[in-house]
Structure formats: C-alpha cells, structure tokens
Image (cartoon, rainbow over all chains, first blue to last red; front, side):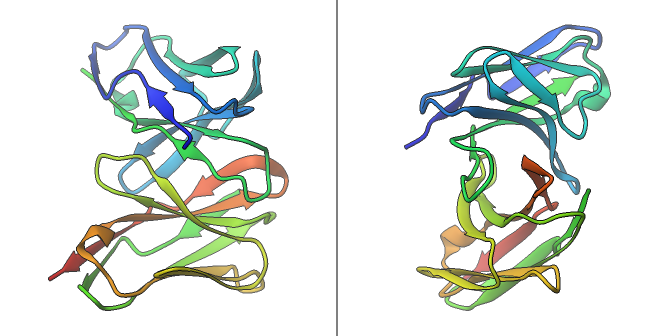
Length: 114
Length: 111
C-alpha cells in the first residue's frame, strides 16, 4: 500500500511566522501535490511537482512556496503565516500524470494561525 | 476551469441505497474520480470513469454521462461505516495532472 506521511497532524503558529509542512511518500511516485481543504470549498490545489526540483502553481499559490529536493519529499512553506491560511492541508502523490492514476493522500495537517 | 456541484448532505437508513449526484461544467474532460473521506482521515480512492456508463465495484457503483456533464455514485446496502464525505473530482484534459474537486457530500447512515 502507498503510504503518504505528513509530519504533523496539528500545528498552531502565530501570524508572521515561517511555517514548514513536510510530506513523504514511500512508493517512488513521480507526482506530488499540496491541497488545502476548507468547509464548503472542497480541495483546492496549491502547488504540484512532477519531478525533483520541478514545480507548478495550482489554483491558489499566493502566500505559499514549495520545495522538492528529493523524490520522496515535498515541502510546503508559508513564508509569513496569516490567519486566512488556517486550514487543513493535504499532501498527495500519484504514480503517473493522467489516466486513471489516482491520488494517494496523507492524513492531513490542521494548521491554525493565531 | 471547472465548476463541480454536489449536494452538501444526505441521510439514509442502514441497508438502504443512496445516490450522490455530481454535475460539472468543464473546459475539457479527461476522467472523473470519486473519493471517500471519513472525518479526520485522508480521502481514499473509490472509482474512476472516463467513458459513459456504469462502473460497478461491490456495493459501490459510479455512472458517467459526458454529454450531460453528470455523474453519480451509488451506495447499496448501506452500512454504518459508510457515513463519510464523498468527493467528486474531475480531471481537465488541458492540465493532465490537475484534479478539480467538488465541495463534497456528507452522507449520514442511521440505524
């Protein structure tokens, strides 16, 4: 089974702090994703990476950056956290781009910015 | 972009059948996914449709009509453990990696 592990289940940070969310997958998947999930809005794509050191912006990249230095690890960075970034953050990976290759999700990190 | 609509909540009785509808308006289409998400847990993959018709997988079935921009997920012989949120997601053929998600339908199964 694919395992996608997010380093923290819950985080509480202060406005203006730099925040790192870490994600590791163990199945040698090419693609990794960061989504945020908010009530009534569904999952929205923040960033996507299809290879080491490669990244593409999703629908809502503002206020976020990412890093993929190794294939198995994809980090989401909030340069200066704000209260509107309080959300559930979900990392996912997939074997291939396109087709029926599904996303495999981690359990999420619930971030609260005060 | 994609507009994906699904009902917010549904309630059904144990042993019954529930149908969750999903409609989408897309600039392109390259497949539709259904995911199940229990409270506090990760979404897990349920089904994939890219051609019109019905895909059956045990108690769960998923249907697609591309001309109508419509899909449904059918849950039969409901069990208490089926209480969860069900997410409809559409892949855009212009951006093959990208899945756009609906807001999810929370299904509550009552005894």
